[in-house]
Amino acid sequence: METIDYSKRITTRVKEMPLFSPVLSRIIDILNNEDFHLKDVVQVMETDASLTSRVLRVANSAAFPAINPVDNIARAIPRLGMHLLLSIAVESSTSHIYDKPLSGYESAKGDLWSHSLRTAIAAREIALRVKIDISPGLAYTAGLLHDMGKVIISEFLEGKTSQMVKWCDNSIVDDYIDAEREIIDTNHAKVGYSLAKCWNFPKSLQDAIAFHHHPESCCRENRVLTYLVHLGDIVAMLGGSGTGADTLVYKIQPGYKDYFHISKNDLASILINVLTEFDRTRSLIFGVNV
Image (cartoon, rainbow, N blue to C red; front, side, top):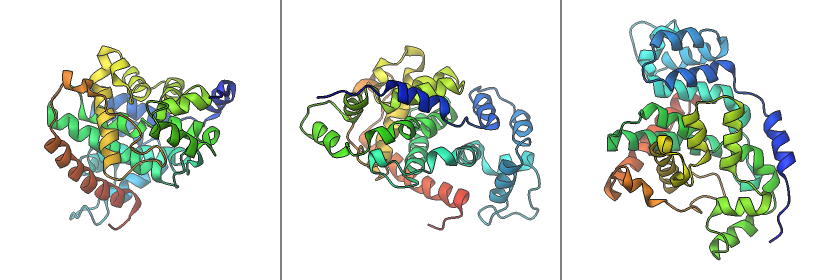
């Protein structure tokens, strides 16, 4: 197989990628601390007029009937909850990243956001179900961000999708991430890690993004979080939400069993919860009736 060196071009794309808004980066940083104070989130969000407006619109929507309208962020947060608030903040700040079609994966506009949101919900649900010492909110955040490297490498994979799928089907490579490596000498997880590092994300999120297809290779400190995202990713795909040609062309890494137990019945129940919560969240953020 011919390997083409795209490393310089990909590195340039990473450096040219528009930065996450400072507001979103700060919110992620605050929420990564389990002892965060609500007032810290309020103070940061209030500096972004567009985000504030969007949060208040959702908080005052028909989905949250109340006698008195919400007129400030401090009152909106308890009504919405931190997970929905984070989803609104990420979508509002990253539409230039998540809303694009990924031609190199043959996926449509909006597929990446839908898959990322379902992965986030699934990772959170698994964390809650298995009762481990990992913040469900952290699992949710990592799930939202896990596939952002695809935005960078998609253009370099364009026209090669059928070849990559064939390699996977014929066991020439182990999975789709290995197929990416054969073509461009890197993969979306590594490139996502580069973005996360460039944007000064917490180390826990950097690792979860870098190793979400191979959690066994992650440092022990962040391995459980990475397994949560790994399984959340699989659950999202099983629910029919992938990012195109690579959907379900990955292997479940069984090492999670060394850290927590989750049965097939648990996963089936979680999948139902994911589908329900996804529809609710999408409806609230985008005003889509489902």
